[in-house]
Length: 254
Length: 254
DNA sequence: CCTTCGCTCCCACTGGGTGGAAGGAGTGAG
DNA sequence: CTCACTCCTTCCACCCAGTGGGAGCGAAGG
Image (cartoon, rainbow over all chains, first blue to last red):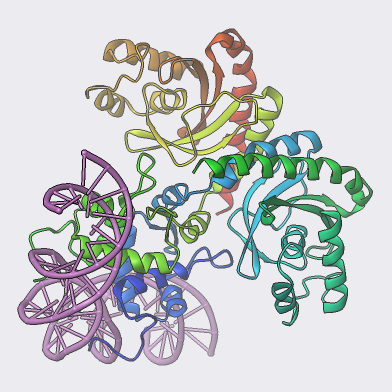
């Protein structure tokens, strides 16, 4: 009984992608049944397709039988064109060396920020951002830096939704947020005070190429050292400018 | 006219994987026709499947029309279970901070080493290793460290093949290599002198958990500073031991 | 001009994919 | 002990989605 009622795309390829799509930051390990549920496919279909994916090491199973993304997909992912990250990384490293704080780089993808690189040491404050993870824009430093550089219509549309509120300090009033974003845009950097995670504050500056913010560089410190943030803003903006410069030089070559 | 002569696996899934498999470190950007050639699939098949992959951002196209691994696959790859890298990274960072040299972490996959992490700064010597790339074992420090910890039958079988010779300094004589590996195993670290790349030397130590080398930690310096290598061996081995310890503590928990 | 190369689209044929169902294995409650 | 539940595995008859040869198009280059 092929071609049944369910069709989350209907082609085999889309089924395979639906299976891969079942994995995300919040669900990195899934049982077969989980995958079937999350992808909307029949269990037997998932069973067969997953077996092929496992053969190829696109997926692997833990001893307890759950599946996770395999070595082969990780390897493939490393091939993703990422000139930005390559160019920026040494500078993140430098900023980290000079400050000893968590430093990360993010881009905007849709209405979220996507963290593409991160440098941290053994003594760094544990924070939410991981490379490959996504967070909303308004409670994060990099998010505000990126959002502030967008066109008015984009900002307006972003603010017109109900905004998540991960902590009591998150700013969600559209008016106040819009005001802050204008300020961020004017002075060239954003700050947050426990707006995403209690206990940590951040500063972030956009990486601007040809007038467009292609990424944002952020630095995070624990709340009881907020006062040190102001001393980090200058180096932060200097490094962001260096990355802008280096990246522009790169892209011209293509 | 389905079910033709070609069948690199014959299922749709295997075709999709063949397409993804066409991309590797040496071929990160391909035209449609390249993909068809490398995967052994008909051009029209590739055309259709690639279109679906592109919709999903598993692949993307550069302005010049060539395809490369897309953001979505990179993101998925970041989900790959990689406790080792997570545990080890802060220590690589620490070793880098203390030395300022290229530091990397590799595992064995088949007969090659696969680099899983790397820490480097702006002043580091440019070297071949990249996360996600593979190199043969005998000309690399991490490779020798890993190989030296393998069982005799494995070493013998490795040495019985014709070994690549990337530079004139590469050691390929089975007898000499076997002798060196025994020495490496005995003293707990390996060194190389321009055996993979002219101009750079390295030292490496295995990360041993329960008597098995699960990874190797390597450090690379430019050849005209070979003499500094000896001073790096102690910190290198100390950090490798720390990683072993931390990783063992992690795995026990599971 | 013609050739080459890469991409897009079409279409008749058919075999690979499908999902319901039944069976097995493991676990925990009563 | 049985019963209920969850998760995994295997089977199979039907049939539609996938296939690939080939034609056509546009760009580059000789």
